[in-house]
Amino acid sequence: MFILQENPIDPIKLRNAGTNPIHGAMVSFEGIVRSDERKGRQVNALLYIADTPACVQEGEKIIEEALSLFPITEAVCIQRVGKVNSTETAVWIGVWASHRDEAFKGCRYIIEEIKKRLLIWKKEFYTDGTCAWIRGSQTPVIL
Image 1 (cartoon, rainbow, N blue to C red):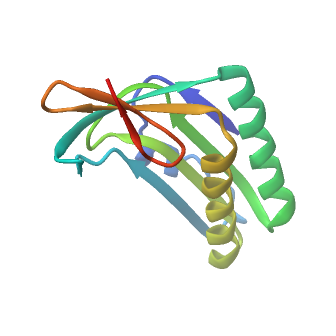
Image 2 (tube, rainbow, N blue to C red):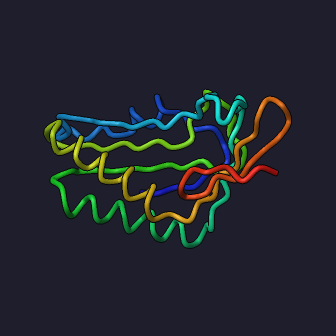
Image 3 (cartoon, helix red, strand yellow):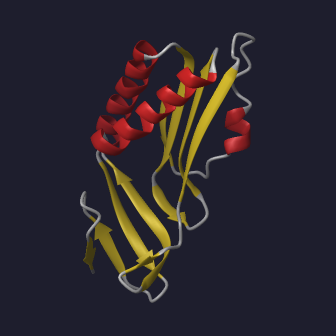
């Protein structure tokens, strides 16, 4: 399951969603907006804009690929869109499997493919009031 949502992500609720008795392992990845410094300016929020139909379609494809490539039983990815403040979760991935190694591999596959393939644009907002779009190379375009 792949979801784009504007509302905050609740990792605890999501983690507890997989209750199948065959699950011996659950691995999650939580991407958090960090308030790091970029080019001398402190980041305080990100804006994610997605090509929603294309993202959902490609996100579902990535989940299906992970389920077919690795012996995992369930996989979920939720990506925030809209403005996300520092310390908030921007993306959450949960993978359930019988064993930990498979769950780790499935989770890594999903995050790497999402970063490469989804049409999501990111804008950084800085504490000095400026902002910049981030290109694929992570080079800010100052506005």
